[in-house]
Amino acid sequence: MIATITLNPSLDYAAEVDKITVGGVNRTSSEKVSVGGKGINVSVMLGRFGIPNTAFGFLGGFTGDEILRCLRDENISADFVRVGGLSRINFKLHGKEETEFNGSGPVIGEKDVTDLIGKLRNLPEGSVLVLAGSAPRSQCGNLYRRILSGVSDRGFYIAADTTGENLRAALEYAPFLVKPNREEIEELFGKKAQTREEVFQLAEALRREGARNVIVSLGAKGALMATEKGERLFCPAVGGVSVDTIGSGDCLVAGFLAARYAGKSDADALMTGVAAGCANAFRYGLPAREEVGKVCRELAKSGGILS
Image (cartoon, rainbow, N blue to C red; front, side):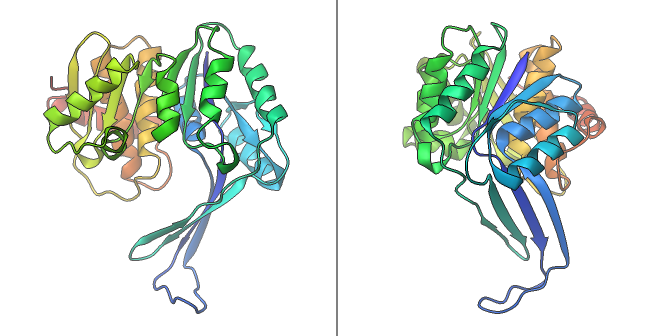
């Protein structure tokens, strides 16, 4: 069983404009509304890989209702805790440059947290638990630790894609996988990593702090992995025109987990994850499984994984 947790999901309203006039009226050329949240993105991509999973987290108000409807359209099982207030709306303005306004989300109460932990404790022992993204501002810095503490005796395989104190909290529970990007791992250790070797050294430092496997996404350069077996793996990205990179890290996590769920090796799983991230960057919205497969074949032809 794979479960994803999105603590602060959103509706993302994206608009295209030819020119932005500050302080004046701006008219859009196109608009699109989609569901957002890193854990939800992982759930959707796992579903497109044919991997059953359930999405958990907090939802509130009519925006929460719309998020649920979008998940139903993707045939994703959902078991969210309903809270007071509204799930957030993020506004993304695409012009010559991209500008984002991200909502803060609803206030999460003590009973809400207890209810979520209760739902998670009903999952089968040995389930994969994916915690991705930030916590609502009202619970920032503490919620990850409280959730993981509440399920620490269930034998879950934890995959954490978060930053800062939330990532530090996850490390206390020996996560199966963590996936920072290069900027995030540099910030965590207060060190710049200019070379691949330096990034590997920071990834291995995360392993010493508790992570079993560490994937560091490198944007257009691909991703590298320090495995619990002591291996160093690197997969370059496929060249192409980047359209929208939002969600590429989530696709990387989903592709890796889907391949591992299917019994693939770490190397094959990393290549699938990088292919999923690239396929996402080449389009608007999350890619179809066939698009990921096409990129994966290109990666294999170009040499695939390097150690």
